[in-house]
Image 1 (tube, rainbow, N blue to C red):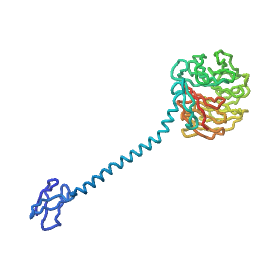
Image 2 (image 1 turned 30 degrees about the vertical axis):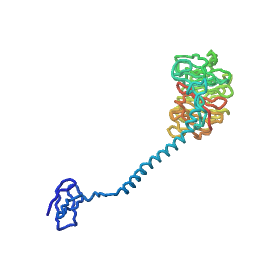
Image 3 (image 1 turned 180 degrees about the vertical axis):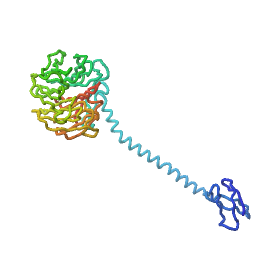
Image 4 (image 1 turned 135 degrees about the vertical axis):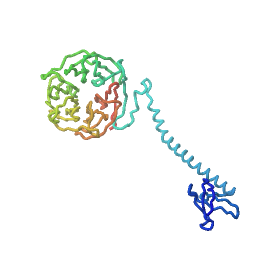
Length: 380
């Protein structure tokens, strides 16, 4: 047996020159080694690494191949970037068209392009207590001239804006009690639900015009104007009623225990809406459902239900009906849209929670969301 040092790691490698095929393996680094040739004085060497000697012409060819391999990814990147910028160019041009018109505050208007079910036409308002500013606005109403009335939940402030969102004036109701809801008729009368009582005011001056009488006493929590000049109201005092007034302020219909009769549980907070045919919709924020009644007060349908899936309702705040009879429910997911029979259609997300909603005569939707009002045009 003979021994030599591994040319790779220096460990001793033993071998029998009379046996084997002229190779040995280092037991330390596992390299395959060519045995030393004592007759020619050649030491052992590693044969697992092959050295290739190439001529100048081969090297030049290899150099060209390397450059080709380097340049191919560069060309691919250039082509991809060109495609991306080509696709973005129309978008960049269109974004330039979204600049505010002259005289309009930046960011207050947007181009009415299709962005799903509804597109923002304009918005106004900001955080604060000055004219045109809001802190916790939850109620909104429109009169026959398109004037917009916005009510703060606390503090008793009602602001009046023109149809374009420009501040006109403001007036105060009871500053010590929460403002539950407000509505406006086509003549400019504003109805405020506060302390369980509905009071009528002159919309321009804020002058009180008296309270609406109801034989069951106070308990009103929501009020909406009807197309015929009357009111639809939600009332609660150990029973969830829906009450309808005519244009003269007289009670013409009462749906007693409207939601609890169907849901078999007491509904403590009800929001109401009415369509152009007089059908009544009651949103139970505890029942997480919409309950539809005929103009005569007959129960017709129920839809919604607790949950986070499309068509289910979670933390509902508001309800409205558009000119086509579609029902809009503002909840934690955004604004969900249903057909009048309760079939789910779509959802869109306004900026903030839709605590109040109403449609104008052009079937445009106004949403109040704490410190701003947003006007939407429907795309469908």
